[in-house]
Image (tube, helix red, strand yellow):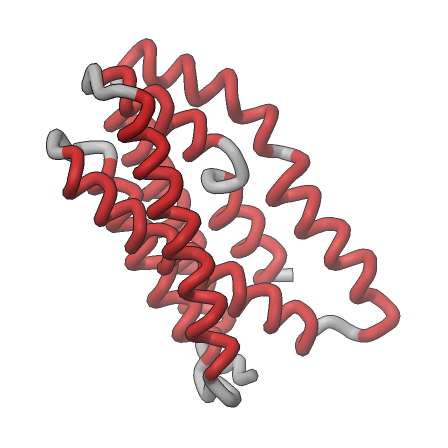
Length: 179
């Protein structure tokens, strides 16, 4: 159960709200659409790179701790990106953010497959998929409300806080898990 909570919290901000947040971030800085494209591309390339790197690794002794550390890095990076004023730095941070959040997703999905009882794996996967993809559209209006009321930096800081909570739960409950 703690792993499902960690997945739900950590991905709640990434399966859409960050994409909406990045659109508002670029608009708030009066940057053009090509910068948004570069930021989103860097995020995607970073995520793909994490999958490639982790697929080359055979067994991760402390996958739970590694996942927790990647969540801490994700929390810091998602908070920082909302504070940036330089386009190239935002693109670079987006790439690192994609890598760190990708590591979290790869490791959490692997741990779900390893830890869930085979007869419940479909149900557990359905719940985690609902958390990552089903809840995010409900957060789109909240993203806009927070950005309109307090600025997009506050939204990204809130996402960082949510990722930090997921990291704390992960360190507390999952640090000894192995792959």
